[in-house]
Length: 231
Image 1 (cartoon, rainbow, N blue to C red):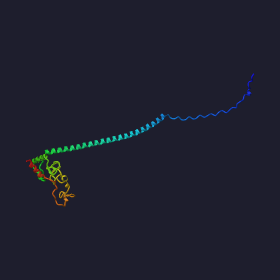
Image 2 (cartoon, rainbow, N blue to C red):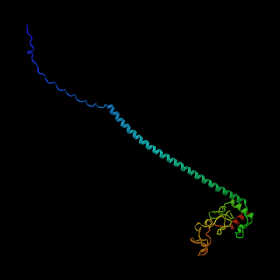
Image 3 (cartoon, rainbow, N blue to C red):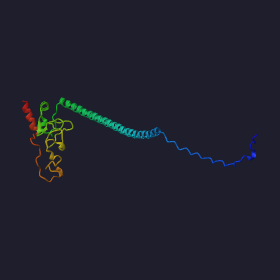
Image 4 (tube, rainbow, N blue to C red):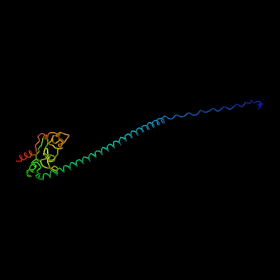
């Protein structure tokens, strides 16, 4: 019978130290997916484009506002111009109406003989005056070169505000400062010598003939010519 080994004969193994734990490596950051990077880039681009569009829109709004203001000012100026034109036309129509009334009134009157201080041509018979007036209104007559006979400023009979003739040319309707029969260079000069810078009362110069325009005809001669043409 075989003897089994005893426990005393079994070798014992010394206890070995336990192994140290191996540290696990820290996880690396995961890279962003390529699609997310592209989305962020596109968003930045869109944001920049949006800012540019906003700036352009603001500039356009300012430009449109300025254009509207300019148009409003232009409309206002045009309206003021139209009002001024209408006012001027109303004034012209009023003056024309007054002139027409005056001419109509004058045509219905028969001039009366004037005082003894008036020149001889104003003392002719009323019927002849009426005939002369009618003749002068039908035809264009000249009292000097370029100056025609006019009831408004250069007439052979008394007219409104001018009951006496101008003492130099002896026509009615004007004074020396606007006499149409005197050369313009001598308007406003001395009535004695026709030099400037003094008047007739203090004139030391010799008296001269009036500087009439070329072709001047006195009212007496003009009336005689008219009466001769009516015969």
